[in-house]
Amino acid sequence: MPAEETTPPVTAFMLIKTTPEWLAMTPQERVSAFATQVVPAIRARTTGVRSRFYDTEFYSTRVTDVLVWEADDHEAYHLLVDALRETPFWDRYFEIVDLLVGTENGYARTYGLDPVATITT
Image 1: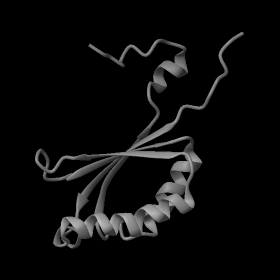
Image 2 (image 1 turned 30 degrees about the vertical axis):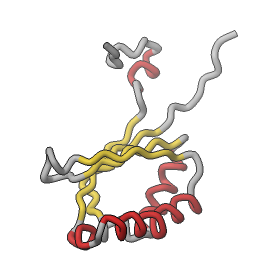
Image 3 (image 1 turned 135 degrees about the horizontal axis):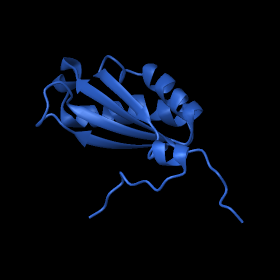
Image 4 (image 1 turned 180 degrees about the vertical axis):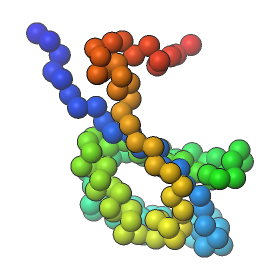
């Protein structure tokens, strides 16, 4: 019996840059602002999204952080972005520099190939 075909999750690399307002806060104030103003909006408006956060300011001046969002589907990702835009996260605490959205190994799925570009050593 063949494996059930599933829709690949949507992965978004959200390249962001901190704003002076965000940097003016203490680390405790930043954590509190994110926990009370951003996270509740995401939880209230979305299901099926996960995130990882990467600091990059010590290597890049254009992008200070990268949020990697994985959503179960395009609708979940759409709802995530809508939720973020309704909070101070979007253009107040962070400038959204770029959004890179894709699916992991999409080429392999499209052509029925092994994902040769995914390498582990």
